[in-house]
Each structure stands twice: as structure tokens, then as C-alpha cells.
Length: 434
Ligand SMILES: O=C(O)C1=C[C@@H](OP(=O)(O)O)[C@@H](O)[C@H](O)C1
Ligand SMILES: C=C(OP(=O)(O)O)C(=O)O
Image (cartoon, rainbow, N blue to C red; front, side, top):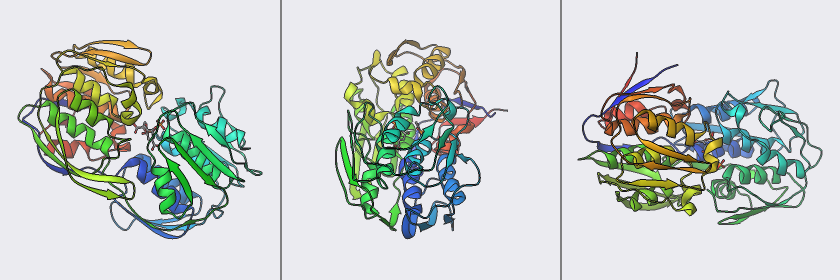
């Protein structure tokens, strides 16, 4: 189990591109694998989560070439061409992989078992198995609704008009992917619009799909056509450098080629409400939403009540928002974010405990926290094996009064393997502990 030591260094300076978007990379492999023909993916995230998805399709008979870093050539086998697996399919740490694949495999005529690591094995799966089973799928979980998922060969799925109780792109995507091979129409309505990459990318792969914010609908029985996918930089990875540059005096940072879809960039809004200086330049449209260059300068922050409507748009960015709040003047209140308790770790407690270990006052609630900005000191924090908790504390340490030891950082490789090298290149104080 590896640790980091992170500490204040100089200002954050430079120009970077962050690795490819994780959500788009997962979907690109999945859709290209079940398409007719050969697809090319550029900018693929070379992370453990997305590589796990690619490995699963290789185990189902899809030939996937990796001629160079970030490139995949996927020889699609068609929607009915996947082969029965001869082993359990390992989704690693990835909720996205397990939930989306449960939808895709629910309609297959072979049995499959989806397993995950210790963290994924604790995450709730009924949010996907309930709607899938009401379409006719047969999926068994552990007693508490947790993995492994044992998916029985499908008889015939029927379309569903699903009113999702949770704002989750993973739930929406699982139902839509099952709908590809279901009889009739499959529709999903969400309580709050979430990222629409599945919808956009299905359309790019030739599927006739109707969608608008908070709603998507498609007819079963269509086939996918191979295409080229250009994966944008992952805003959720950019979030760490954005926050570091905001927090450290004298910083000036440029991040190029980042996806700025509004369903992903709630953190920009929240940081701006707190006083951040972030400019967006060179906006252009791409197949998965707008892409831009971000220019960030240091600015002193003040506490805010994070608007509840922003929560789904920044769902993966709360760990680093907590870090920003710890350095802000006054109290930052987060509410309506109970989903954070069922991510790779319970992200509310993980952040609250770590912040307290550094001397920051935090009051937890069921669905959020009040973070009292102050002067963080050095100390020892446990990431609980959660990539985003580890990276958030690496950012906060740049403003701490002493060394911060961050425990259990290996899982950073799931989403951002080059994080430490890239951050050191920008001037952050971050090294492996021995
Ligand atoms: O669809 C996706 O790619 C994702 C959706 C979000 O999860 P939920 O659907 O559980 O909100 C997000 O937290 C996750 O990192 C990726
Ligand atoms: C929650 C995350 O991913 P997943 O749900 O795919 O594990 C994340 O990357 O922060």
C-alpha cells in the first residue's frame, strides 16, 4: 500500500492537458465492441477502470488493439456477437463499468458474473437491477443488493418507461443499454438531468435515440455502426489542478482540451461563487459536448452554501470542493449530496475525518457537511483507497502548515495515473513516502 507526502511548494504554473475522460472512455469501448465494423478511439484514458472495461470485452471475444498510448482499435462484433465468458468478469474499482455492463449483459443469451474489488463490492446495485429485472432480466446480487451480479441468460426483455428515483447517469445508461435489445420502446426520466454521454454516443454510433435534459428514449432492435471517437480531457481530473491553482497564491495555469459539458462542470460554478478566477477560452463543440481551454489564477475564496441544484453536476468533485472550502474564509455548507456516501468510499466521512486530522472544523450531516475554513496544519490522512480523496488531500496540502501524509494512494491509477508526475510538473509538493 503506497502513501504520498504532500506539502506546500511554490505557486502552480504551467500549461497541461489532462488524460481522457473516464466516462466517455468506458462508453467508447462498450459501444464500439457491440457495433458492426471497426472503430477507432483516440484519447482513451489509460486508467485501471477503463482498462478493466476493455479487458472484459476481450474476454467476450472482441479484438481490441492498442497501437499506442491512448489509442484503441476495436473490431466490433455486432450487438448479438459477444461470446459467452469462461470466467468471472472483473470490473475492478469501477461502478460505471459494473452498472453499465449489467444493462448491456442483461439482454444477452449467455450467463455472466460481474465482480469487483473490495470497494465496489460494497456499492449498491439494486438501483440498476430493479429496473432491469422489471424489463425481464434475471440478476442476483448479495443479500444487501451488492455485487457480485449473477446475470442469467435473457429470455426476452421488454421495454420500460422508467421514472428513475435517483439522478444517476449510470442508472439511466444501464436501462438504455438494456433497451437496445428489448421489445418496443425504453424510456428513462430523471429527477435532475445527468451527463448524457450514453445518449450522444449512441447517436454517433447510428442509433435513433430521442433525448433532452432529464429524458431519453430509444426503440429496441437497432444496430450500432462503427465510428471514430475523440475522447476529451476529463474535467473531473482537471478539477484538482484547477483547485490547486485557485488556492495557491501567485498561481497561473492553463488547461487545454477539457470537456466542459454543463452536467460535469458544477465545480466551476461553485468555485466562482466562492470568488475563484477561472476563464473559459477557445470553446468548440465536440461529439460529447463542448471542449475548451481553461485559464485559472489564484484568488482568495469565501464560504458559500453550495446550491443543491449543482450537486449532480459536480458529483465527483466534492472531495476537492471540501479541500477548497477548508481554505476559504467562513463556512461552506453542502447539502443534498447523500450519493457521496456510496461512492468508492463514503466521501463525506472520508473528507470530514481527513480535514479534522489537519485541524479543520467539520460538522457532518446525513447528506453533506459544514466546513469551517481555517488554517490546515500537517498530519496524517487516510484516503480509504479512494482516488478522489487522495488527490483532494494532495491539493489541500499545498496550503497546509506542515507535511501531509496521504495513506493508500494506489487507486489514483484508476482515473488519473499520471497525477503525481503532472502535478509535480506544475510545482506542487508531492512525493512518494517511503
Ligand atoms: O455515468 C458515469 O460515467 C458516471 C456517473 C456518476 O455516477 P452516478 O451515476 O452514480 O451518479 C459518476 O459519479 C461516475 O464517476 C461516472
Ligand atoms: C464515482 C466514481 O466512479 P465510479 O462510479 O465509476 O466508480 C468516480 O470516479 O469518482
